[in-house]
Amino acid sequence: MNELPPLEIPFNRFTPMGRELDYIRETMGIGQIAGGQTFSQRSQRWFEQNLGVERALLTTSCTHALEMAALLLGLGPNDEVIVPAYTFVSTASAFALRGARIVFADVRPDTFNLDESVLPSLITPRTKAIVPVHYAGVACEMTAMLELAKRHGITVVEDNAHGLFGKYRGRWLGTLGQLAAHSFHETKNITCGEGGALFINDASFRERAEIIRDKGTKRARYFRGQVDKYTWVDLGSSYVMSDVLAAFLFGQLEGWLTIQEKRGAIWARYNDSLGAWAAALGARLPVVPAHCESAWHMFYLLMPDLATRTAFIEHLRARGILAVFHYQPLHLSDYGRRYGRKAGECPVAESASDRLVRLPLFNGLTPGLQAKVIDATLAFRR
Ligand SMILES: Cc1ncc(COP(=O)(O)O)c(C=O)c1O
Image (cartoon, rainbow, N blue to C red; front, side, top):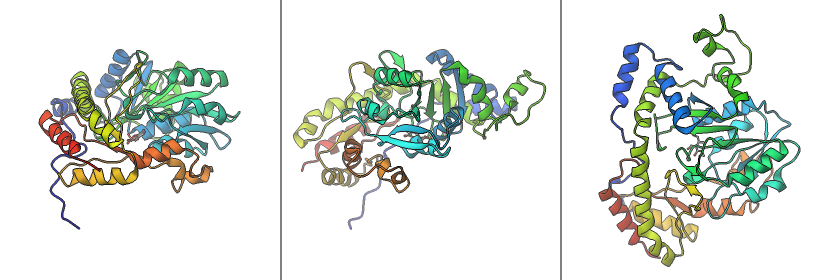
């Protein structure tokens, strides 16, 4: 095997916005490093005021925000939850943890979002939740999904790990479902290393969400002086983000517009440069429907087949550039198989899993480095 050159352009690299350490020092100076304090409140208020969220709660991860949603809905073994077959493990595992039955839906061939047209055939009297993922930061068809869910009394929990700052018909992603889970993992547009948030858009969940996040107690209300003691009142766990991370997060959040503008420009440069090359190869670029504003989370190519994708990834890697594929179909995973769907039953998810490849896109990707990725991509032929 030929030795690979050093990696010049990674798939992702964290880029500081500049104030993260100042804010961490400030939180240390205030003497508050546990959760729920000055910087957590500042960050939560930022989401509430800027995005119009009823209540935002910072959590230790998106996975944990999804687990909180499962607890809030009181899910158990008699309940079913519909999730896309093409997604990260947590979209399903957070609900499987409560014993709920996972029902995998195929995704749309244009956006790779949960295909709303298959939902009527998957809904049963046991369906309690639908969990749309706005893949790559492009919205699912929420009008149809929300209407269907409302008619059947089903809760919509957005897994908005990719979609923060994207919009659907002019509305922020993360404000459309009754609940919405967010990720601030290192790979996301806004990050604090590991972290997340649960947006509560239905006020009836507000009080219990805080209790579930704080070990099943009213500790948060106690610290606000709203109750004179706290004890065990509900199921819960320890999902509160530390203020050290919240301070870091706030440093990123303040720069959100700069981050989004940078990512949007990177996305547009890829899109403008690669269309003719992709068409000649039989590949295609991402689709953003006219009524969606992307969150610019990711830029991907859909290759004609697995062999071409493998050759393309090797071609870039030989030039010091890391491009990566994405999800394995969840219904065909070792654990996912227990829910009974077989190979061929979610054909779009299975095909995307073989053919999709993501190009480097991170806040610090300079035009010069991106030009190298584009040139190397254009040099790929089959
Ligand atoms: C769609 C989706 N949901 C959930 C997660 C989990 O996020 P976290 O690492 O914050 O738990 C990810 C992670 O990348 C994801 O892509």
